[in-house]
Length: 124
Image (cartoon, rainbow, N blue to C red; front, side, top):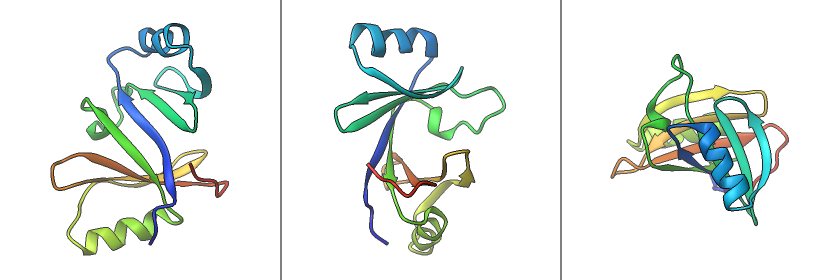
């Protein structure tokens, strides 16, 4: 199954309000979608930069620090199963949000990659 594009890059942050100020006011990036108080997006040319800090009850793997990349795929569930069959580490099963389906895998070095499927069919 082909990867269509990079949908977003997620930066784990320790405080969203401080980080919103940095990306919006200091860097001057245009705000995009947001799900306060845990997720905010900014437009940087053709790439979306998301910042996130999970709520206490949320799964933690994507927020353990560092950066993760969301790969746009046509069918997140099918892609996750295809990769699982190839021995890829599945960190988080595909979950549905109001706007997408996404699951999380790790590369051989433990870098996190989202398998991301937008409900509107768009990518990138």
